[in-house]
Amino acid sequence: MGASGPAGPQCSPGSCPHSSWCNPFSKLFTFKVTAASRSKVTNDFLCCYLSKDETCPRCEDGWEPHGGKCYFFSSVTLTWNESRTQCISMSGDLVVINNREEQRFLESRVRGKMDTDDKFWIGLTDSKNKGEWLWVDDTRLDSSVKFWLGNNPDDWRGEKPDGEDCVRMGKEYLMSWFDKSCGTSQKYICEKPEKA
Ligand SMILES: [Ca+2]
Ligand SMILES: [Ca+2]
Image 1 (cartoon, rainbow, N blue to C red):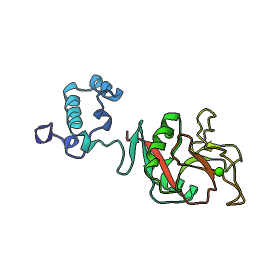
Image 2: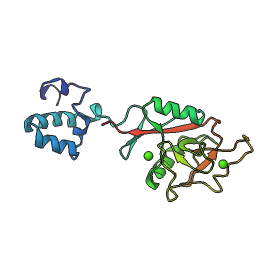
Image 3: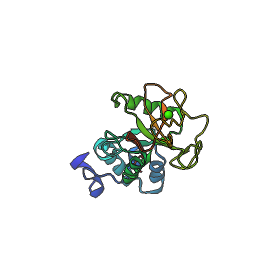
Image 4: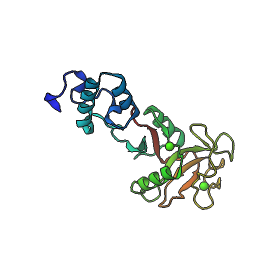
């Protein structure tokens, strides 16, 4: 729409009055059309819609959108705690895998990002109580939504005497979770909601 579009700061390049307006099917848009001045809202919507690729990214640079969430796949390695701190500093947290579809997406994405043996921390740990696997949002691991590989979790003590209390994912299968000593350095996956 550019120079011929409605005047006002909300239509300047690089801004959007409300990113939800970029979605003509969103409830907010429907609500605004009903509740506010129809012509103004339509203008704002058109402005936003026509330039949405530039002005309404769903995720920040470096984050990948999927299913209403944004995902960050690190290229550096950190311990599980350091990884979590890093995700939180970017307004997210380590990824919580809520269903099979999300696991499938993540598995397909890490596949192209792994060197020989590196894998990615996810937000699952039993460091509070051995054997009680909790996600970083404090939900308990659902027995119908788990993707351990082979005989994991095995709490192997060959590497560190306190065993393996954190979970990383990788390997080219849907079943791709391994418990691992939290103090080892791994790549990691952060998750946060799309921009409102
Ligand atoms: Ca999730
Ligand atoms: Ca293990």
